[in-house]
Amino acid sequence: MGEQKSSSNKKILTGILIALLVALSIYTFRQNSKFKASEEFLKQEKEQILGSLTSMEEKYDVAIAQNNSLADELTVERDKIIAFKDSVKNLKNTNWALVRRYRKKIKDLEAKNERLFFLNDSLTIANNLLEVEKDSITGKLVEQTSFNDTLIAQNMDLSKKVEIGGALRVSTVKAIPMRLKSNGKYSETNKAQKAQAIRVNFRIVKNEIATPGDKEAYIIIQNPKGTVLSEKGTFTAKNGEEIAFTSQDTFDYQNNDLDEVMFVDKIPQKFVKGTYTVKVYVEGNLVGATKFELKDAFLGL
Image (cartoon, rainbow, N blue to C red):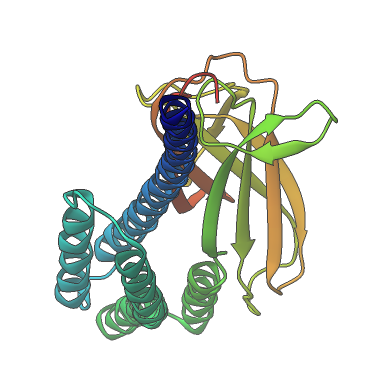
């Protein structure tokens, strides 16, 4: 009788142990799944941070090329961004505290960028106007032309000033890869195998001395090998260069901020993993550029 009771107790104990092992396995599996999901999200956050820093670096490159007087200060700030980007890129382990700290630093950098770029644009226009004034004054002192010739020269100077100050500028450029869902709507994606279209957003900033009316915009999307996607033809830039473009649009500009969206679908080339470059031209001038990255899908997801 005692042996039967002992055997029964062993069975009960064995059952309890098995149940505990099953519960522990389920708990471990769920915790592991949560960890992997969190790890993937942090990885995506890191990539978005790197993308923002790359975009800032490109804007500084454009600004440095435009303005000599601010070149040193702009170069120092650009080098800080490059160093920051390298530290993020080389970071092995990412956590929520680092992500929050990096996001705050990017926000501070963007605020400083806005001030520097505004100053850079103002100085560039001012320098151009001073150069025109210098040429005009030199011509008057040397040649002492007739009254009619003077009027013609002044009109030409005025035209140059209007052309320089009236050029349209873009404050932000954003390119978003999209996929077509089963319900017929598009949603964002960062997977090369799922990308089917590209949406490009940019803002034309207010310019009270620009000539209002229809303006032509071109976008150029290049894959990691530099090939222009969905090439529609070519246009002539202000410098006379013939450039192949992906999409063209005409918009009505009335001297105020204007948000423009250009959507490119039915792209014949296959999207591949890598970094894509997007450039925006308005009225033949390169006004902005950005990049985006596509990754390989993992297990079809």
